[in-house]
Length: 310
Image (cartoon, rainbow, N blue to C red):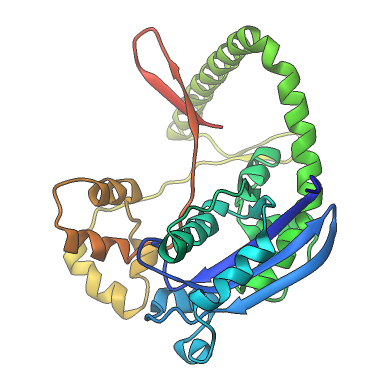
């Protein structure tokens, strides 16, 4: 096998839950180095309803897939194209779970190809980016795109950005590997930096308190040598009765923007024992995306745990 070859892929689905939903569109390219050598794409008739929330994202309707082949017909072609090569996807766990589920359903076997998550790589190389979605990745590397959320368009966009992302990721990984022998020192250094940041944050709060006092005592705006202006703003906030504001927010289409879901609470409810299966299914239907995060923990002498993302 060519170690320089990967399969970059993307799928669109009827919904987000891989245990209940089905593959709707599959696209993949064989990437050898930085060159696309082969392409494969197909729509798939899932033989079940496509959720409207999914149609809103990818635009694939029931009419578009009525005369398309079923997963039973296209899965051999999909697996033949992928072969034993590693698969690359943006948040690849999503694509991987759907392919693996189809393998279990059709052939009672797993799908164990090595998977490479370009979203994780992007987050590692450019942690300062506001978003680590595929569109942000393509924008970062100057990949032009006019179509989004169709499998082949997203696949080609990722395939064009991936070689450059991989080069930077490999360089960072090599540097990180060189530091493993220094972990005790780096841990001490991390704690010093953490302490310094906490002290600086406290100092900033102290200074802001003095600034507030200055304005409370009638002080006027102050302009720095570089043009920044120290000003005093007053903002009034209110609490609201949700039942009274729900109807007008729905009427103007602003309910979704006004209400922020506690996703952690929802995940715990779906995974817990207190709700019925029917209610859990209703909550699952509201899922919009899936991601996989890993973290390490620092256990302080007081047994408090501070988490930070890898």
